[in-house]
Image 1 (spheres, rainbow, N blue to C red):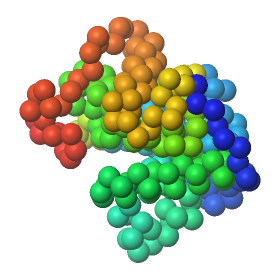
Image 2 (spheres, rainbow, N blue to C red):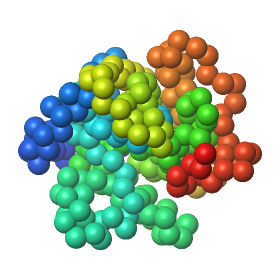
Image 3 (cartoon, rainbow, N blue to C red):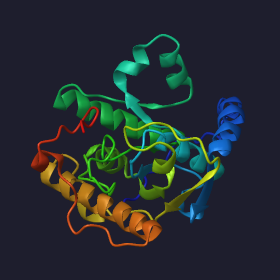
Length: 254
């Protein structure tokens, strides 16, 4: 398991900037979902962490944000670097402490990852990263092959990766489908897992093969959590979009 390096300071786990947002989002979400959080005590109550959930619906981030808030932490996400340059939106992202992700050159991206990781540790913040990078392409909505961003961020700062699975949001908003508000308060279950043991990969964040293996370990933990929620075994191998002629980003064509 990655060992978090000492931090210089720590903020409040739910800063005041989030309370006005929570006062709006949480009650509205409560009309649509009935979110049940299981094993929420496994999310660290202080210090940095990387939370890695599965991604099966466009509405997942609202479910995850509400669950993290109820577990006593501020829900911060990784966001595209370009969004931070958008007027007003960029200001909101910055003041709430969202984490920019770079899609530029390898050297630039590596430097940005290190800086983001150091900031998380220094401020004792957590961040939510979807390791799949987009909605799963798996036709049965199981987690597909992951990308290495989450483990890069974690290994760079010795930050624990906490796997999480949620199931039920796809009934409200099917993947690339239409919103279904009735019946109200559909049950969505969130299950939090133990921190993933990535000790075998410490110091190897610059080795692509190690990052791929570490990511597969994380995806395996997420799949097992989802298997518990669904009451059925996860596939033996994860869906790889490239094997099926699919793009790994953007809207999935029918």
